[in-house]
Length: 219
Image 1: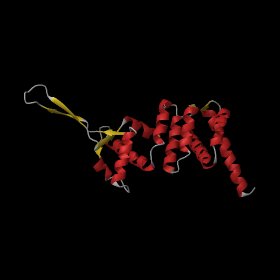
Image 2 (image 1 turned 180 degrees about the vertical axis):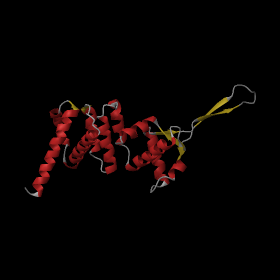
Image 3 (image 1 turned 120 degrees about the horizontal axis):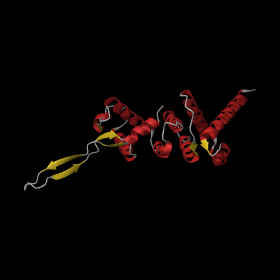
Image 4 (image 1 turned 90 degrees about the horizontal axis):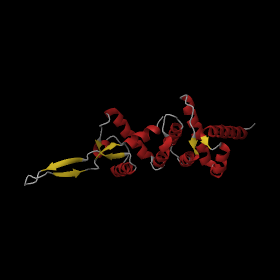
């Protein structure tokens, strides 16, 4: 058998392997899934989807985890969006999201929300979010930082791009302003004080959604 024949045989083996795994984790059975997704499994996207399935299965096997079921409503958008990802670091996040979605210890009722977030995040945004999360782990749950201070820890990104990235992470609900506080002033007639609410975008912290999102997209 020539090299071309061996490559084809290996690819077919991976396809069979992936279909067997799908049969274990999908509701309804793999035959119905094939009818639904058949036209979309093509070329580069097809290879990406197969690799993601195989890698997710490997992660679960290495941890000794018997995968739980996942609905087509969740699996289809996960694989479709993951198949479009070119960056290896981002592909790994999709693999982790799938593997953790199949881990019985996770409540996968909100996996669709994580899919929607991950498909919108750029590699630079993911890089900065990971840095923020690591600093949060090092400093404890009351940690926060200013944009100016955090920018010192970021390499090869202009401050303008950094501003846009932080803004987008706010939009996705992964970061929030830290310094919402009250300031009290007393009127001249000594009646009830005025309560002045102030907030600023300059100091920020990671949200509970941000923490959960990063965890489920990690190993």
